[in-house]
Image (cartoon, rainbow, N blue to C red):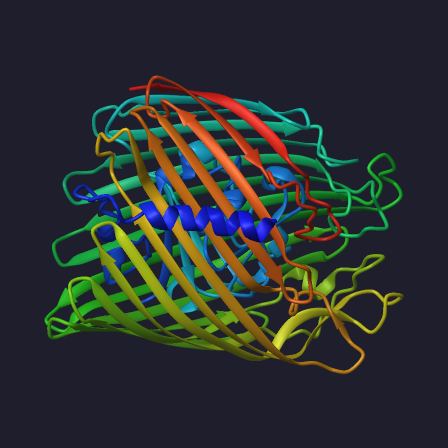
Length: 608
């Protein structure tokens, strides 16, 4: 029945999707990708890159960023509970520790654990777009961008506005979001906050999440800008089945603070951005929520960083350069008091060879106080065969150091390993992109090989999990995607956006006999995503999303989600969402049974 629904859904779209003439397609192709040194338009990228637009953020049936990312090709989101209260994100078969999250280019690395990576202290309503770079990104963003990087982008506006969103739904769910812009002369500023809470979809899965975000920017003449950002997130949640099925009364409370200050100098042929930032994460974990004395962990991590990134243009092309230094400090009742420092150097060159060929190559070198110097080269070659068709290929070395949980954790079901070494991988990809009249199609093949993969393993169910450097794994993958986007044409019914993608991953693992692994062979195997956004009249929108997901050694599952919007961009709008309409039973992470069919609805107020 599920396959029949999917077939009918896609067949009906195929009859209509190309029937309309797109004369005003959204100009996504010319969006500058927000990298720290050399910024290239989306259409000229020689990488597999997905941009989640503001419209997609607003119309996707989702209450959180992890839920939105679950509809991005090649991205594996594993939620523990609804609305992404605790979620892990992997790319191209990688684990949550192998994906780097960023906010406006600022790394959100947490030395305690990759489980903290999605604690992004920014309300959804204030996000302008999300850039998902798939494949090795160590040369661009540094270590821990092992299988990819996700950069959340906000923008300062010249216009005054205020936006309020409220909603309620099943499981006692409710929330309020507020975002505003109040420019004062040369000073621009954004303020946003959000509150979400729920009783939970099963025993001990209640949560409360609060975010507050402030960003300001001052133009210092024509060529210089000073920006500052302060953000705070507080989330408390019941964690039944999150980390161990034998303890249903687990509980966690996490507070994340982020602050940054940056200066930008932008001359005709020279660009320099310098910034300092601080990230603090406090984590309290209870094995029994109402008995703190039974087992409790307190972790407090602080990351202090300085960066300088820039580029200059000469007759040889564009040269990018950068330097970073970071200090990571942890105070923990379980992991002990730890401290390590990093220094990183970036250098890359973009060269255009004639009108059709471009080469971008570079090197990232870093020094970690625990592991010494490491060097990570990479390069991409692009060929613009025509105005619409582009071929590309690339190579890169990716790198990840163990978290302190990997190294030192001691618990009833998990034990760290202080002899772990960083994991490193060789990556290759080749692909083709075709873009014309609002239609974008892409096909890419990728290969990632590592012989020192870090994975948690155990010989039997009676033995605790412990990470080891022993797995040799080769990932081969194919991703195909098709999108079609329109600006409003005034027709009574039109397809404003159509998305279809398929991702296949094959993992060839050399494994020790009698050893069970936790993450390496639970990655995505088959992922099919489809979606269509219909505009009906001037004010009504209907978004339908389908996913068919199969992970290695796990049963596949099919999900159908929908959202309807009325007057979304007007002064007063309303929306309704439904998730898992097919009432599928499935698990994404741990032993958390995800909810069946569930609903929510709300309103939007927009003041310009």
